[in-house]
Length: 364
Image 1 (cartoon, rainbow, N blue to C red):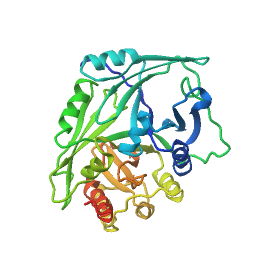
Image 2: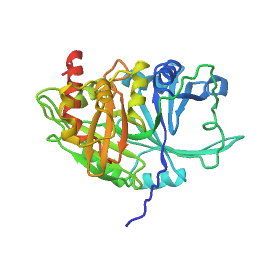
Image 3: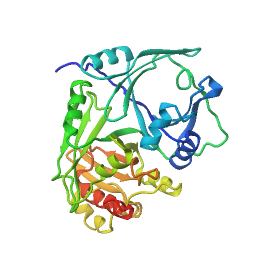
């Protein structure tokens, strides 16, 4: 077996470029239960941008906005709206990660850069992936500060309690027509990932639309990136709608793990997060379809949580509506009871729910 030339320790953080980081941070804290962690801006010597760092267990979001309209981040949000810019991956050696990936054909975003302050040093490097999305390699083994140099602790009086979100389970990218296989090749050749699951338009289709997807995983399974591309259908697929409104390829959704999906989703709903709903008929024969589960069916149906089983167990999942006005980024909440898969049995019900929303927007 070949050695893993890019050993990843997991997702370090997800950075969103947004139009108003202060308000976005408030939304993710109050609605999703993130805790305030760190801040960077003019007061810390950063004259051009502001970033708020929020955390919940092993889940870290960075929300960044430009202070001036001519800044590249302002252009990013003008084109794409609020969206994911950076999928940051924790590594033991950021310089080696950059050398390995650029040597294999990755396009450099940032050569290895050392950031220092009194708490030690963080080493960053980065490469480009699909669209305007970036992978940043983060080496923080010699750092004891709150987040990284250039940030200070952020301790506001208002800190809503956690909703039980734990870590990034997977992150899904939408790419253009006939672009899935080239990006699968990128993850295989440049990052050393392997394709662990594939879905074609027979697996993921409704009466009106279809898409194709391949799931890429790194060597230890800590990082998984499914990649979607549109497929021919009678009407416009959700991936086509995303590409149109995001103005290009990008992160479609981030799946957040929980150990108590009923408790987590109840809190999220009560705090204003809106979820896609499937018809009551989905639950009529659920136990016949997926077998015995530990959970009571009634709260699952009340909340709209979906269930699917594979050879290793089952999973529970639910998808939010887009969290911005553009029909682009959304979130998945997932609890795994042994299952390693991604809910193939739910695709049809889920995508019909998405199509109902698309139809209401006039985009189907």
